[in-house]
Length: 396
Image (cartoon, rainbow, N blue to C red; front, side, top):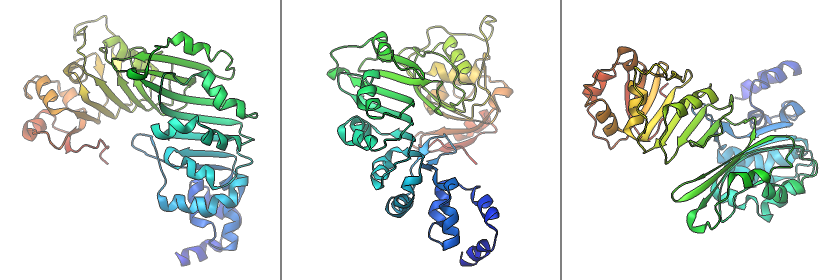
């Protein structure tokens, strides 16, 4: 390492800057600050300090991951206090938000992104303690907020966002958000209508705001978000989905207590053209059983799909994706499925499946506790690797 630094130190400033720009800014700051006077001066360049993402992205599902404690400790104790006044854009992952925001002052911060906030922190987000942190960011101009909140009696709506956030941030001109708020029915006395939530956003001028409320057997959920939608994950889609075009989304979760029919899956294919991962959670049987000879029905295509999770679904959806000719799937697909469901749908791996369909699957995933017939699975899906794991990760 010492010899490498000596060699780097011999290079011209422009070449060193070019090399360091190939790294993420947080990698430059963590690895190079304090090495020596010349390297330290380059690491302090505004190219590397102005915009900072203190998180990592999972290449598998595009979710955000926290930095390690070792890295985060050094940022909070040494790096951020030195460069806090230079930071203009800051993106944080849920578990590190409070530590980073308390580490120093950010007088020039004008763009803050908060990602994957858990329920406990989300519950306190609208409390005085966290609002006070936002008040310190007097120059904040852009705020991106992506949270899920467990509420009592009242959903998060436009009135709450104004009262707890916007009124305290005079310079804020762009506020984008993706907020799920859930109320357990034992705390709920008033079942809000979608129209009443929409009215609270009447004076939000810089974005189109989409609102959607679903009332389930045990709870109700309200989803509010800025459109165009900018996040990579869209969860908890029901039959009440408002449609639209979501070109940034690669990961989708469909979940409802009412069945998904052919037209619903067609809507999903049109709304999420770049979807890579699809998870379906629905135990209700389809009411309308489409067949391969129905020429009226359009073909459903998911051209970019790489992972399909059917673990918590009715057999009808397993059958739809495996046997229905109106469902067009790409090659090299990774499928996670309940073994007993797969066994029923394939008639114990004796049901005829076209060679084109059987060879599309590159990997099958089962729970470790499942008693599976690996021999017949391999005969039925000849090109599929078999994994017995609770994790659903793409094979390399």
